[in-house]
Amino acid sequence: MLEGAESLRLWGETLRALGRSPGAVIGGGLLLAILATSLLFPWFTAADPLAQDLLARLTPPCWQEGGSLAHPLGTDNLGRDVLVRILHGSRVSLFVGFAAVLVACGSGILLGLLSGYYGGRLDSLIMRVADVFMAYPFMLLTISVIAVLGNSILNLILVLGLSDWVTYARTVRGSVLSIKEKEFVTAARSVGTPNRVILRRHIFPNVLSPVLVLGTVRVANIIIWESGLSFLGMGVPPPMPTWGRMLAEGRVYITDAWWLVTLPGLAIMLTILAINLLGDGLRDALDPRLRNIPR
Image: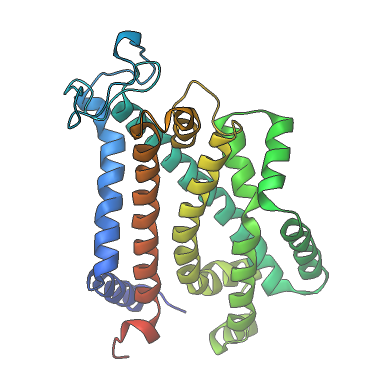
């Protein structure tokens, strides 16, 4: 069991190993910049992402001929400011991504712990349900449920989260099957420690590392899925701006107004890149075999 001073020491080593990873530093810094920009920009501008100005429609970015500093990244077909819409879209995408991962992670960890620790019929039942979820195409399942429940941020988060619990459950179950046979778990069980205490204090802390790495990477996947659903018109309901809807609306003007597709796509790419770099660094930092720390 990792607790107290030993746990703090290991987390300190992990943070130092994370700081020595150039990819993790770059990814973490870029992700923090994206988060800070998306959260703080309303303090510096009162621009409305839905405000239309047909006289300024399809204005190019400021560095291109015909551009204006009033709209640094140009405007769309309705004269809406692209920069403001991208920043608002980042808030939606990041919120949906992190919230859906929390839903999937919470349900997956709980079911994985129960399945791996108790085994038997409960394990078989949970794993067969997981097999059903894995057999059904994820995107088709998501589209089907949203078509029935309707478009809303809450429905999108629940659908994306509950559709992704299988990955966490299988990961946690595999770790629990190994950890529950360790000496410290056997000793705790032999002195009459309740199962809920063993799960909470002895097993859960030891399965947290792979879950953290997995959750970081899955945030990127959720953001891509949210953008894809919004592109298809089944994501966050209009008129709320999202990166996927901006791509869908701008594809018609791609030959005349390249910025309508390129800039939201670049925002998605940078966000996914930052998350993946941070996830790779976190994986290396949490694995003693990869971070080369003397034990």
